[in-house]
Image (cartoon, rainbow, N blue to C red; front, side, top):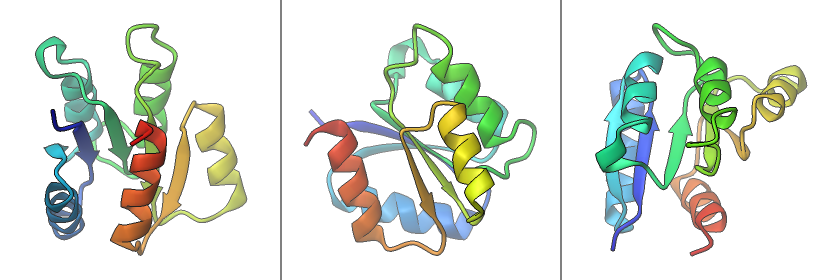
Length: 124
């Protein structure tokens, strides 16, 4: 059965590239364009993701808050979250860890690196 990945990214171009790369690897992909939509989809009882890729700078709710809300909730804390952002400062990475992110990848990105990190976190 294909692993389910929720990609939250507000750039339609980046989102399309990521979605195509992951689907080519056999993952089932769901997408969200803002933090509120990501939170709703991550909490959907009938379609829980196996992993979440989360941009930081999102409309409505930023990625840090989405990550914190999921990681500090016993129902969802087991879902690995990859922070995926153009923000490269050490302070940003530190905050990502503090809110519970399992990995922190920066843009621009190499799809092979992203897929490798996903497989590592999902133990594939």
